[in-house]
Length: 220
Image (tube, rainbow, N blue to C red):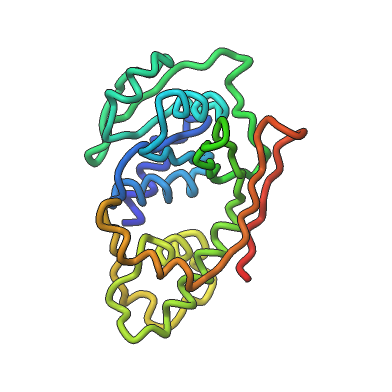
């Protein structure tokens, strides 16, 4: 797994910022971890976003690389993306950015941008740091360590913590767990697991009310 993530991270290196529009699955998780490894901002694209919302997010984040299982939706945006290859079932799409657009308008240290649903206007992004993500992942892994059944762990929280901070002690039995990544339509039964590690994620607008703010997630 680590070798595959390192290989993908190297391939992502020329990118300024990447976005993923795809269902939950191993490829989504590996892309997320590879972006973290390569220190490239990752902007997940919700599948329910409208074309206008998708275009807004791609422009706001300065995204030049998209990995997707829905290339027709990205192509229909007429945003300059073209198919350049594929990886692990995902279509690789890139676009050139003009010089003034080349640097994503994100604070230094941004690892991920989580956008709101945009129900009251254009989606607004919360800029999250790598340290905050890792601390939250480690907290989730620690809370799950004492569960009676350690055979299934939702998403890749424990794996993410292990990849980024191998020097940190892992929770007991963490290496024995499997990571289960359910498709979105089947994910609802395990939503209660997310309450095991509560966290603060205040929203930070990228372009409203002054400069964007980098958030440090802290488990509570």
